[in-house]
Each structure stands twice: as structure tokens, then as C-alpha cells.
Length: 256
Image (tube, rainbow, N blue to C red; front, side):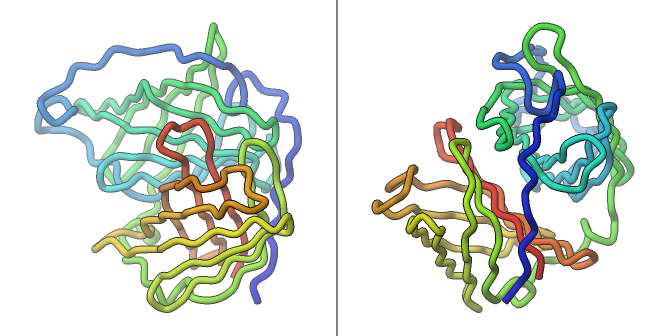
């Protein structure tokens, strides 16, 4: 069995990363691929850093520039939410207008926009904007050892006792992952779910697809898609996913 990592659902008391309800949109110039030009910074990988509010940030950016930024309350090491979206890169500027902040501690989700300076395989530093003047700045560093390793299913096979959260609430849950990537799980409420973890060549994360059962599940019959990331250094297991409408999301944390 794996040990529980408790998600401390504490009020952030912030103007960002858990605040605001509407986006501050930033226009982007795009080419036919949604990015500007050919000399763009490469941002895929694993990042770690902090915000000006004292929050720790762990970021995973997929090969298609889809991002998942997990954050903690100020000066603590427990996770209270994550931000997802699609980054568009023009030169050394990475930005998005479709960011979504799932703040499980406050049982809310908010639209956000992000603008950041990107240095290939070095750093990603910028600002997350919410409604009005609500903003939070962040500074993150590219982790080469984590980013440039290929995830293997054998790394995550096993049974995990952890904590699962959706926007409406949190509960303890057990998740099992088989050697072929098949996933099954159950919360203490009786809600069950099944799914699949799939490796991606050259990626440090897994593709995640889950289907919730109908009995005792708030998201009955719904599917969510996202990522699983396992940090071999601190043995932390992260699963983050959202539904197609991006009105709800799932976060599961444990340690191996």
C-alpha cells in the first residue's frame, strides 16, 4: 500500500490562485498552428517554483503545450488546487486566455489568463490574471532530470490510498493501477471509477482518462481527461483531470 498525502484545504486569502471569477483576456497573434513564428521557445517539461504570495508551484507542460500547474496555500507544502489551459508561444512569450483555476480548498473554479516569459529548458516566469486587478506572479525553473526522463508504467503500478477531490468536495479514495495501465478506484462515499493510464513516448507524464460510475458519484457517468505525473525524487503521485466542459475537475494525490 502507498501512503496518503493529505490535501490541506485551507483558505488561501489571496487575490489569485483561487480567486476571481472572470478572465482578463490578452489577445494573441497566431500562425496557422496557434503559435507565432518558428523561433519560439520550447516550454514542454516539468517546472517547480513559487508565487509572490508564498505558494509553491509544480507545473507539467505537455508536448502540445497543455499545462497543469498545481499550487499550495502560502508557505505550506499541501496542494489546494490546480490551473490548466493551453499555452500559445510567440518568440519568448507564452500566454493563454483559456486558463481555468480549480480551487478545491474553496470549492470554486475561475477563469484566468496567463502571460509569461519563457526560456527554453530554463524557466517560465509570468503573471496569472483574474477578474479586475486580481493578479499573482510566479517564477518557475525547468527541471531537466525530471523533464527529460520517460515515464514507465512499471513506476506507478500498485494500489494507492490517497485523497480525491472534485470542485464540490473531497474524500479519501483508493486507486489501483495494473501493469497494462488499467485503473480502478473507489471513494469512501461508494463512488467508483475506471480508466486508463497511457505512456507517451519521450514524456515524463502519462495520459489519463477516467469514467465515473453512476452510483454515489457526483459526476455520475462523466468522463475526465488529464495527466498522471510521478515524481521519482520525492515519490509523489499526482493525477489531475477535467471534464470536457471544464466545469469540474479531479485531483488525486498520494505517495508511493
